[in-house]
Image 1: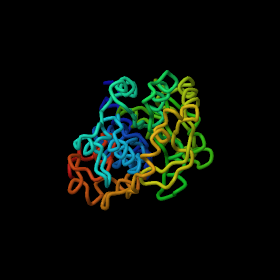
Image 2 (image 1 turned 90 degrees about the horizontal axis):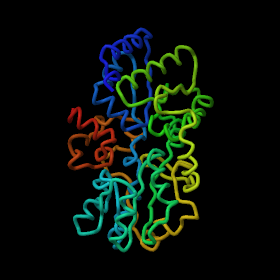
Image 3 (image 1 turned 180 degrees about the vertical axis):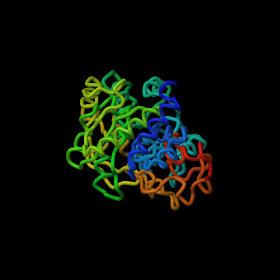
Image 4 (image 1 turned 90 degrees about the vertical axis):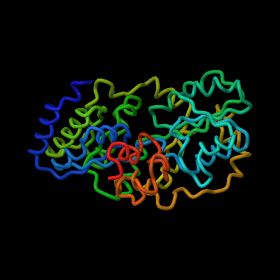
Length: 357
């Protein structure tokens, strides 16, 4: 780890980029990448050498829609036990948050894995696990689905697929993207090939990278080199973990359990084939079907809190401090949107390391 945080090596990479005399904008789609950029002060260093990096929709909690959170609250209010990861507890909706529902006496439980939710099913009448995350965490949900499950256990899947979101970002064309920094953890599952289309069809250079400061700096250096040489390829800086083929066993498991479906993401229109729903074989454990009687009566909700610009942060249109509510009406203690709730959210990261700015 320490060799990946070597200041002398970092300075040599920055000096090399500076000599190329560039003015480029890259995008990453990973909350951990954003944390590294801000925590280690890489962002201002890169701007000094002509590189701007914007955060895309790489925070699973953040891209989960208000409607999905409202569904979970409605289920809790109807007497179902909801099992969620801790970051979801404070995500605000017009119906309040899951934390508010818990405070009102409804059964909302924080778990650290889907296995925890399965074990807790023996204590309750109806257990609903809210599955959050990209291809990194969805295999763990898939793994329990192929085991013998308690009859009272179901999954409300909010799992998302990352490549379709990249398609959406590129096709929306809201700003120039000169290169993409692809996430290491997702790539460890899906491999490198799903990104190829963004280079072959759109001519965008890409680098899959890890999470240490030198990983990110090397990724930027590799992107600059591709651009200077007139190339657009997918290169893998994170070879110590990511293989070209990804994890075939995990991919096969995902294909067995889930089917891709069209879905809204926070800040986006409907993105085709961008979410995982359970296949028909698992209908008896699909919360959307098992508890359809409750969900169909849930009143509609507005997706965004007025004044919250989380959707624009997720699309890379603005940076967190450009939102008028940042650090004022919106703080981690009193969040207006999920970008300030999740530790992978751009606003939460900026507030923790940079303050109100």
